[in-house]
Image: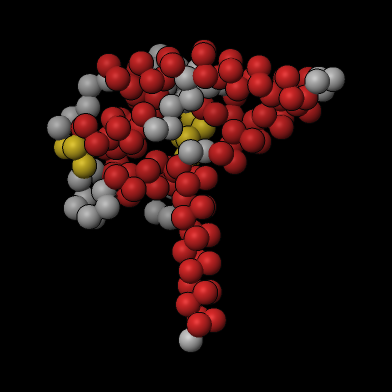
Length: 146
């Protein structure tokens, strides 16, 4: 009985960690940073990474960061719609999207974006992309779990 409880606890912890990494696009960020390291091959890796991250925070995301997957937005939506009502408010959407901004520019864009008063998961995806990528071309990917 105790072993079963520990196994369930570990599984839930894994799911929580995986959802956190997905929502915040950590794997994508690390992959993009690793690609930049391989391309530039700086002597001072730490200084290079610090500069890359500071530039992303200041000027916005570039490269692989522009790809935001439906499953990532879906995870963010479900964290916001905890009671599973099927709709969230525009204020809830803004608050959720602000948590995944990479730069001051994205933050500012999300703050001025006009959100509908209520939205479904599909509408949330569209609003999130529009708010995060104002004036940019962006790539979308199909959700794996559709």
